[in-house]
Length: 562
Image 1 (spheres, rainbow, N blue to C red):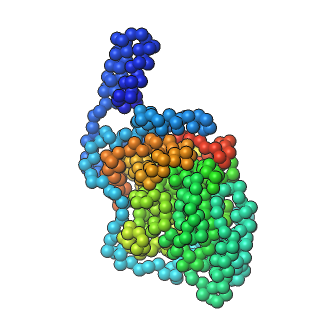
Image 2: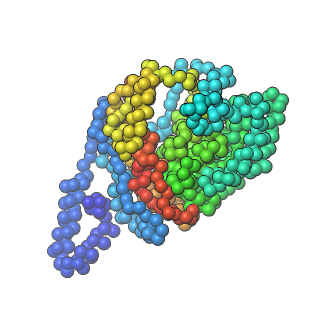
């Protein structure tokens, strides 16, 4: 069926002689061609679905698209790369098989949304900035590792910003002492491949300056002396930037978000691992600078990606926060699989100046992976600033932070759950997430049944948008130096390099529709809850750090809710 759908001159040239040689009959050969055409017309069709305006659509059947393909590695993977890169027909077949042509069948009566900018209300614009006093309230509501625990119920706790800050203020530890422990910890956890570059002397110098400020009672903020790592695609002065590629370039300036953190006194201690181009979601990267990042709970398992090193570094306790980036789950996936909190902020909330993921990307945002929700909130206060270097950020209103409490009181909070989507995961995951929802109900929250229309359009639209933008960013490199990319990246860009301007505009129209659908739902509930992934952290196959795999089934389950 897929072959018939993409019939062109190349297919005729292949099918006609093949069938004729096998049958030695011109009439049978013509009959086979005729049957392919009829099958294409009857079963695949070329009809058009005329959609209603998004505001008039409140319900559609649940048809979440799942991708499937054989797992490939080694020689087999390289052979497939060669075939795909050299056959337009094969590329078209794979596009159809994976639903990337699905939007062709729809007439969408909505204008495309290029950037999903949230234009604030007058009330939001008039809101006051978060004060240090309010931040201290949030800080004190964090359950930290240094808080007293009942011996009978004591559990492991990560060091939070609160713990570091308390140690510094009480003089139990200085930033310089913490820096020495951090440098040792980075070296001792090198097998995780979480940190790909750091400068011990620079860490010591930053910590020395921070220690002096505490001694002089002039700390810059709550983040004074807090160790923070950074995803490799984000510029950090004095360290190289590579974006997961096979080569790295020295950087002589900080990205805007890192400048803001330095101004708050944070110690920027290193670059974290990531997948190539930030386009893959398992955490594997066979390029020499990287190697496969490993889960801090068990190195035999995946971290998730693309911000694999950020999830692993925070999960390993190297620091309470890492600055990462997310275009299709790249913060949320590793945060989930490494047991952390990940936040993908609203478009424009955090400046992208100095983030090299994809110049002009409409999906990429910078945000934190942290040990606690409070830590994520505190970091957002310092990086959520309007930045002249990023025009999108000038639309953002002052950040508002609710009072976070240790007390479990969710009275008045409505949680939306789309049952079919929620349940589209292995039973163990669904059960665990249902138990969490039950705990939220016990705290006073109300569960409301919802339905999210047109999820079957959202997935291909997102894939088309993010891959089109990334392919545009590297299309000259991948054409001139294809061998500088890993095989999975070459496969992905070979297929999505066939995306057209029409595909991209159609994806923007679907974005408009999904904004309408989610906005309508969020008028009735406060949040929508789903599992984070359609799988627990998968086992890393028996691969060396120089070997890759292509496993579409694994990627499909990891990205189920992104």
